[in-house]
Amino acid sequence: MIIVMRHGASQKDIDKVVEFVKLKGRTPHLSQGESHFVIGAVGASQVDPRDFELLDGVREVIKISSSYKLVSRLFKNEDTVVEVNGEKFGGGYAGMIAGPCTIESREQIFECAKAMAEAGVKIIRGGAFKPRTSPYAFQGLGEEGLKLIREAADTYNLAVTSEVMEINQIPLFIKYVDILQVGARNMQNFNLLKELSKINKPVVLKRGLSATINEWLMAAEYILSGGNRDVILCERGIRTFEVATRNTLDLCAIPVVKKLSHLPVIVDPSHGTGLRDKVLPMSLASIAAGADGLMIEVHNKPECALCDGAQSLYPNQFVELYEKLKKLAPVVDKTIG
Ligand code: PEP
Ligand code: MN
Image 1: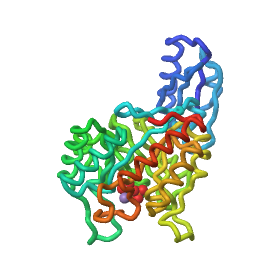
Image 2 (image 1 turned 60 degrees about the vertical axis):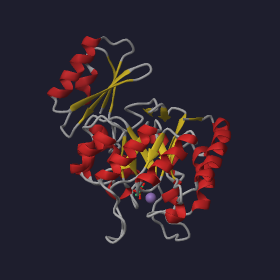
Image 3 (image 1 turned 180 degrees about the horizontal axis):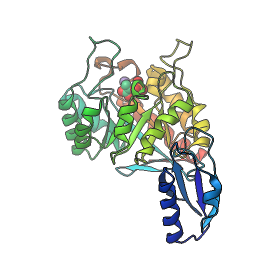
Image 4 (image 1 turned 90 degrees about the horizontal axis):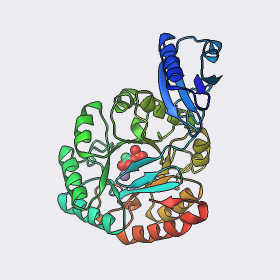
């Protein structure tokens, strides 16, 4: 349930409503909209909207029938803008996250970081804990990898995004990483999501391999419900009958989610297609469809990559892509970066 306060409602009125929400066994979530203050009353207890309508300063009470509430545009109409290292996602800004699939060695991650910084990227990606289909495939360098990507990022003034797979890894990520990524395979790891709701760093939440948009938004709701409002949704392709590409990149999810939710939505065309030569057209298509940013795999030597080389761009291809995006962005009312 959402309680919309009257324009100019006093702090005393707001405090009273908040207290009443708690008294009724629900958790209040506050949001200052452009013209009205909004209070979300989230929880399972039975409440009668009329009890709230009678309180001073209340304009209207809206029952939300959708299962997600805090991620919904009903709760917050204005776009959420997540800003990291001067790079913005949402509210007309399209941010960029780029870098290798995984951190392989000091030399590799430093070369990648240098190439990304020279291309104008502000946030580098790189996995240290990799969710691999085969237990025999490279599993990542673990903490050593996080230390290396931090060092490389600091050298080139970059922020770091990396995937957290387990609750007990969170303290390490708080130490080394600026944006914590939840991978597709963990989108419904509800215990992990609950813990990430308590941290004060942004989370990139990738769409599950076969998750519906509703399930994806419900996963984001877990993170917001514990108090972390900085969630970036990432469409990375879903599994369909089509096998010509690694996944089927669901670009239609962008306008669908952006209508339902205020959260920024970015696209990962690397995992979405699995093919290097499809990354450029799908990146352009993503921004044209309204995406609030991109996550792209780039490797200094893709042919030698330990993971996802075939979908990783060469640095010069990334530079070309970024230039094209910058030309396209103004046409679709987006600002890159
Ligand atoms: C990744 O970004 O490195 C990754 C493993 O992606 P996904 O979780 O989308 O498969
Ligand atoms: Mn990858």
